[in-house]
Length: 108
Ligand code: SF4
Ligand code: SF4
Image 1 (cartoon, rainbow, N blue to C red):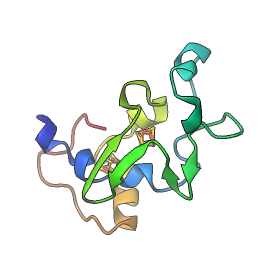
Image 2 (image 1 turned 90 degrees about the vertical axis):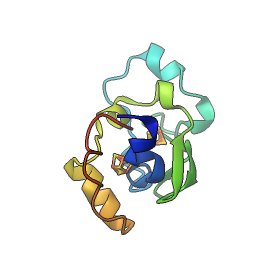
Image 3 (image 1 turned 90 degrees about the horizontal axis):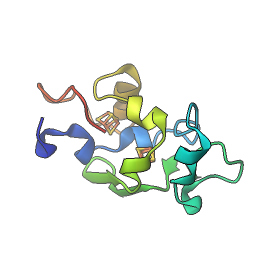
């Protein structure tokens, strides 16, 4: 898959679905320390969100988006894959429709 085929780059729905989604799970302290403090919530339990949207997300949902901490993003963000149930649920919230054929693979 090339970068331009990655549906996540024109989506961002799962990063804007719920403040409960980008939570920390299996990360160790060393991994969490790599996430800039300004993006971590007050309870240190997950990413800081503005409403439902993760504050590390840049761009406009459904048009062009990027994760501002991609290389150090939480595990839950790494496991969300285009086409999985959470992805499709989030995309429906933003009326983004089905994923184009061939785009369901490793992304995010
Ligand atoms: S995993 Fe799905 S909902 Fe999340 S950014 Fe990618 S295409 Fe959008
Ligand atoms: S850390 Fe990155 S991938 Fe995870 S919810 Fe925030 S913007 Fe999305």
